Length: 93
Image (cartoon, rainbow, N blue to C red; front, side, top):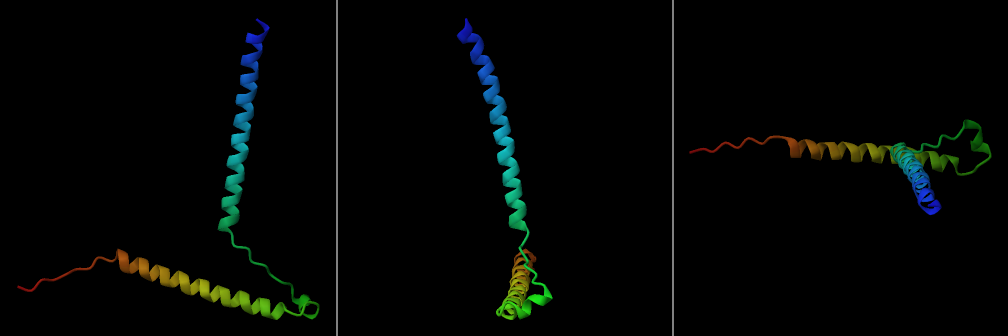
């Protein structure tokens, strides 16, 4: 009889532990989605230019990347507009 009473208690604990693990996994997934959506924009303070030699190159690269991203986004929207636009065809008889 002792074996039968201990099993439901253990299964209740394991169910509770499984639920907690599931909730933790969902929370971790949600945090990963938020991190993926937010781009990391590393802003370098103004006084660092004298200390680190390649700060100007990094800033130039970051600006160029912003321009490329804007261009790609604009082109992607142009393609979506072209695909979604209804084209009317007139047949001359």
